[in-house]
Image (cartoon, rainbow, N blue to C red; front, side):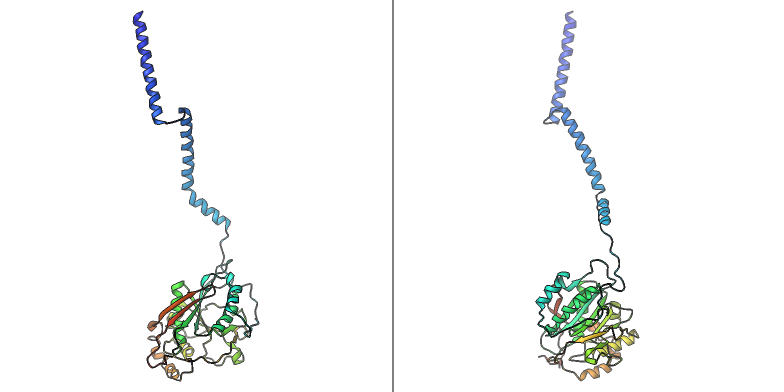
Length: 351
């Protein structure tokens, strides 16, 4: 009998020690709360962790589905923009200021005179380049009319005013070459429109874009009684695709003062590309701002001789030989204003 009691006590003691050991073990691994509570909490944690993990794996596709479902992909802009007005009334005899123009037109523009239609994708990205010096009133009128026209045309575009530094002999063609180079530093433009700052279109159906041939826009100017002065004229407002402009090697850099560079370009185009395109005389009407000829932009009779040498030097004279220095770049909501030193040639008046 005593032996049985002793055996029972030993077994009971062993069970107590075992239970106490298990209690210490679980207490060490779980610092607070009951075992069942902690087990339930661990089960919940594992469940939500698995949900979170699955959510992370599917996060990108879910976001993409939501964004594409909530936004219709933009279509290409129509060939004929629907908001065009046709013939326009243009008036220069006003007290218009650039600040007023900025308030009126600036809200719809991006910085640097850029615009992109919000409801469609333009077929072309166009850089508009204006050779410039001391024509601030003209620039104000140009900006006032052209930005609304270009927006109605649903044109993805940027405006670059290329200002010649100093008072030396003016070189319009070299400024246009520099504008082409500088615009490409800002964006991948595929079309380049070169516009005199005093030329404003009288019809917004004259679409500022590039065509399969170099384009001459200003075919009917009020100064010439809305008639083409001569068949070979290729000045005022013209357009080239990037490929066309490279093929003709840009403008000549050797025309100082007024005259010659546009006729030289016509020869380049006819030599390499054989033809140009024009709108009809109704749509291609322009109004020119009347002004006196600028100092150091007088007619240069030497340009006549240079014009006769076009074919012999067009591959060596142009973009391939362009030299200039940028002295200042100013950007605002209406345009990018780039001042360049065109390096007045030896023998040319320096001011």
